[in-house]
Image (cartoon, rainbow, N blue to C red; front, top):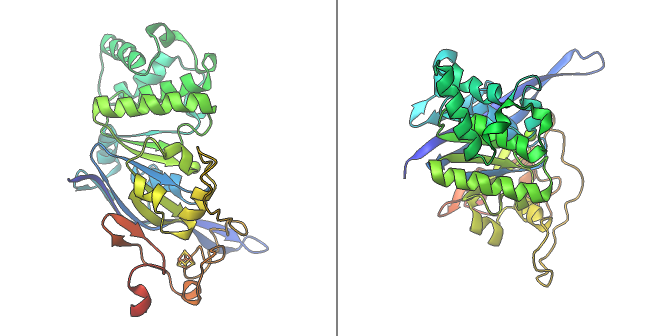
Length: 327
Ligand code: SF4
Ligand code: MG
């Protein structure tokens, strides 16, 4: 199967000022050499604690922020260096849904105007046609035509996210980056939105990159899941493999924190020591070594490669692969 999206060595550094007078400059490696592919029709989860670079990865793919390095291919086309005009045209195929729909919906615009905007941008000039499409989109996301004349504040959080989804779907995109779309919602509403998104994926053959900060949200919706830590991808595999046989000690720790449906199955809990180190000064070698219960000497010095240790199972950890002997 051909991937719709290929990300190779994606890197994003942010310049930061430091020192007493803010005169020293350094770089935060928000995304540090991240590679993965997404197949057409697939839902790829990207999970990690806040500040691990998952949102920056999503936004860099769409070039909403410019990556520092690496390559992004969409449908076999390298989009890393295309002009912003060309990118603007391509964006109709690549949309994003944000965590906080309220912040991303203009409070002074009616729902009609909010959903019409991308239609207008991509050349649907007839207002009648736009109105019809808005009505259709509202139906698709489980709202009604009469909602079109209302304003964002008149809706609940879940309804607002439906509006955000309708806007993202307006021009029939192929790929949607979902940046924690349910994190701000109540648990009961979360599952409604997740079900809606899954239905939409099936109905419109969409592909999602689904960003979340914990593994419980993505459990049902994703086909494969990638785990990020301090700007790096540390594990990536099929969902069942990740939940049943996590390889990376960080993934094992994240899974320990997920509440178990059956309390009789007591898994060995891995409790992480310490806080996430600052991304402006990440630890040497394996960035996880300061918190890893299995850290070895090599982990402090040598950065583990992200490699396929089993069929379709990628891990960056010295416990696996043959790097130990070659180093
Ligand atoms: Fe732990 Fe070492 Fe593996 Fe990093 S490389 S996760 S420190 S065992
Ligand atoms: Mg984020």
